[in-house]
Image (tube, rainbow, N blue to C red; front, side, top):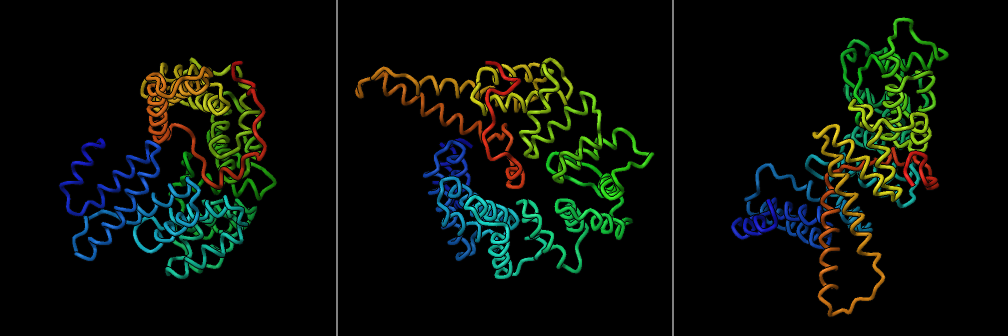
Length: 407
């Protein structure tokens, strides 16, 4: 729905909690945070009234409104409001894990130590009578690996899903032998399990092979194929072992290296991915294979972040020309040109009289472009790193210009 349709529906519906939420999201995607917060507040108020009158919208989860309300307050620096909202997510609904993760991320950004984050969240976990496994999962996602490990260790029985998360936690904390023991203890149950870590999917067999490799002086089983070795290297990257990944695939070909570089970048090892990209120059811009497109995309993304917008746009355009179904590159190209136009408008130095029509026109252009950039940003064309991945990034800024960007 567009704004007009939403407003018309709000006049018709007697209890428009969901519509107010949708209106809030409409405002949020355009960067209109004050209006978005107001709509979320109305949605929460109406939702409370509906429950009192036993007239609530079936299937509408109030905790989703609290989550988005918290996220937008977090973005705007309203920490107290954000924390309160994330606490409400823990009381009911489907977004308890998200509430823990967002709250933990905020605490981390405030400079809290992992042990302090654990203590604060654990207290709320007890107050809301939530499962400790839920908090252990959230701590794992936040990169609080030691705290997650300790919590998982204290739980007597774990479901298959949580058991696999505990094994991953062991790898993150260097408890390789324990990870292997845990796998072997429930091997029959886990044998056909699929393992999803971000964009990477593999099997529990790969997890077992990684544990065996880590606990046997880095020796491979003779039966391991090259493809299995590559999956092993990817899994090592996902578990905080980027240097080990190159030991697993010591002389990668271009296809293999492209895949490893892409995963290094996605997992937050940006410096390492830049160093590795330089070994593959020039970039394979005219190749249509997925691994080549991924490599070129993250290189163009780095150029965008560097501020070399024209070069980034050219790279994104080439990716789209190679594959017209690659919608992320289309959004990325649009973002580049909008940013170029916006910077051009903002950099004009000639004074314009306040009453001049051209001043009003320029301001309207800037407003429209800014809203368009917000809309494109919410397509998630750009890589978004979680807390655990951001922790892996260098605290110092990247050295510009990048070795593969145009001057």
